[in-house]
Image (cartoon, rainbow, N blue to C red; front, side, top):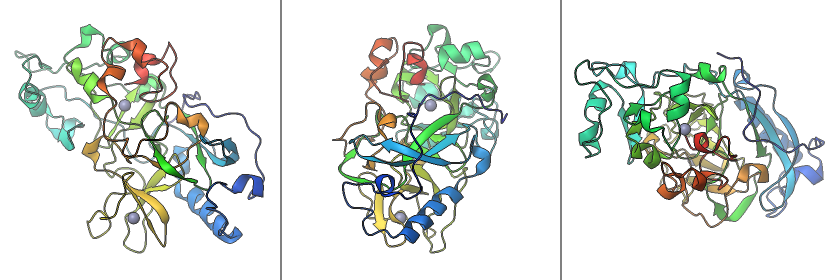
Length: 378
Ligand SMILES: [Zn+2]
Ligand SMILES: [Zn+2]
């Protein structure tokens, strides 16, 4: 399960390695953010970043290389090669097999800010849940749930333009279909570069990386999936598999590796694409900070700017990017977002049957080609 397929959907540009802390690379540039950073501070920050990741979740040790941010700023990025398989928890289960199955036999679904167990009772209740009698994911005689339990059915159903044959299915794909994981190379600015107008999450290749080697993906196109009366169930850890992205998270439920803080602050769980840390939602006192900005970030003396991840039901991790991201990861992301991560992409972008509107527009998971268009949004 750990043998990854070495193919990336988020290609990084070939670039020369920068010398560590060379001025041309390490200085983020526009805001003078690194002007007051001493070499020892920078070295400590680098060690903090490198030490946070679980090596078992990575294809190779993290390196650094020259990169260009979406604003054109030249800087140094970490090159993080995710295995695409969690180093610290099992994958699945996703869909229940029978309407008698309890929550331990299935994963979760997220809707309108809440998290639900996708157990047999949830499957039975879908027509009421969505107030739509066309929901019928199970056989009324046998009680068996319609599940995509083959690679072919996963391929046909784990996309926004669901093959009509798989309408009214609980959709799941095994990590075995992608040989245990799809490796993804991600470039993350070594020194975050704050920007005046936050970048929208929508269109970016991904939101960030978890410390266990799994990508935090942009919001799942839930409305498109629901249009075909399908549930692309997540496991209890908030992840699921498609054939393009492999295993990826849409919610943080507390499964993945955490680096505890010794001052009562929420533990670190990953990094956003802009290089700022993402911490758990609540601090040790159980409270979410009251001063989070539209991106779900704030600043303190110990950590500087950082994010507090969103509640799992919100179908997002952070609201927007406070800092610039590598141009190669930007896709269709652009300034002007503000609270751009407010949920799902517009339905029209990924509506069932409207594949052409999805292709090449940078919406959903990232760079799209005619070949991966539909699955890219799954
Ligand atoms: Zn905080
Ligand atoms: Zn997904």
